[in-house]
Length: 444
Figure 1: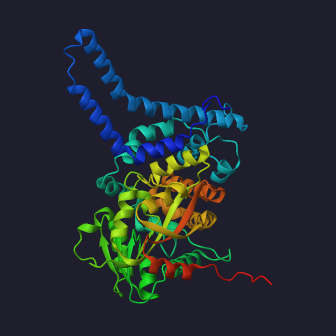
Figure 2 (figure 1 turned 120 degrees about the horizontal axis):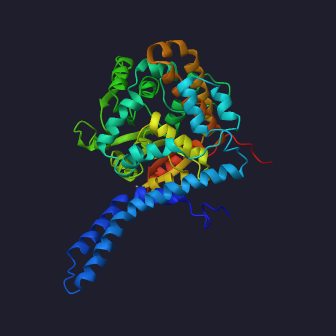
Figure 3 (figure 1 turned 90 degrees about the vertical axis):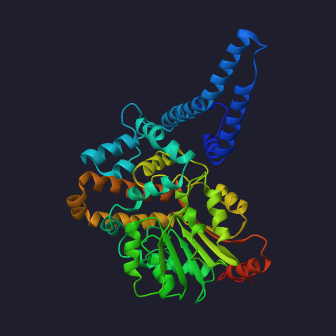
């Protein structure tokens, strides 16, 4: 039994519940508070009034107290876990503190820091500061303006920055390595062709790519597979790059917040034949995930297929998963709080009216992709340091190297889902006939 959590309460489940249902919880609290405010206490006398005021104060302070309890329990549990696992917590700094020192000074080797197992993944000042200053507001409210504000930090650093990371394809999503020795470009091309196969893409079909990035997939689906692709992004730099890349084809590209897509009057009235969204929904946020999926369903034809690729987390989490996730939220993907376990994702898609036809877990392939990105980044070190500075280079190096590790060990992973509208019998039969496992040895 752990002293910091003697009854084995899963903080992860509590936080997911509070965030997902925060509008209802807040509404209930507000209704109760208004009820207490309007109650007459004239017959209760002075003592009754004092009791009512005490009750109101306790009620109003409850959310803050709960937040403090959760944070304090995570801090204590992380230190206890590190001690039990044999880390010398009083001899060496925490993993995050050591990495921050590396970013600031350049002392040490990032791979050695991550893989030496000397530095404990304990919850400390960096994580608490980020929780108080930013994460809580983005997670519980997550407005359209939050999404737009986060784009500059996440995707408008400069196309040269991302070219130095992602290589020729400029694809900011995982590739697939069927043989294990593919180049980065080969892995990305295989992934795109896998997507086209998963959705049974045919020439002339309309495709909506939500979060199209620098549009390499838009380009390949258009020029190789003959699709009529509409791509949407919130990044002005991605849009400009994409228009140049696709200037000789018929792909349509828009600067558009995905959550307001229904406001457009130039989309097909009958819906799209196919919809794809690769590692974009994390930015929607836990609170608005259901809203996003319901929107996607409304944009599809009944006979449509939705390919949904999401970066997720393992359910049996460890504290390094949490520490890494907070670093990512602060420095790489602000506002991307909807990276969750597969069980939560599957519940959300089914609740929104989808049926899951196939799902793959390809986290180790993400680790290989990230390793390729790290190689690209290191090869461009001189250019990046000269233009952006040594600390900026090292912070991104930490992101990539740490992510190689967490995707390899399963802290973070990749879910690839093929979805159809629930209740559309003909479509599910066609999709399942296409996705039936093939190339297996026949029994004698």
